[in-house]
Length: 172
Image (cartoon, rainbow, N blue to C red):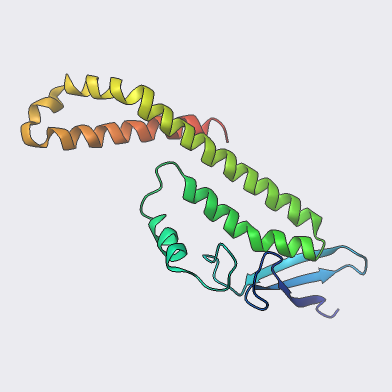
């Protein structure tokens, strides 16, 4: 039996520039209208979020900055949406509706996780942090003199992380 995998180069529908956002797709044709996508290679930089054909300074800065600081998980959601974009485009253009549904489901799961983490982080900062700080001030950490603020910050951050992760793990 011959290898029935075909390759096709498709243009992203959101692209503002012809030939700048090409996606190389490997698929199997079943002889009917529907296909099965087996591989996707975006031939453009995924940081080009506005599809203008180049990665601007702002796009590069925010992509790099998101690796350092993302307290409310905004960049995590943007990264997940950007990663799903070529997959959804290939699934739509080659009519692989199973892949499209699975990718949409994964994006929704990621959105739920990001939103629940962001909400629990905000809840922890606004409602629980003042109580944690008050309790830490009455413990032995307050007697550390010049490094007591640092120790309290570390303990508070660890407690907040434990609370956020325990709340988010119950909703997976």
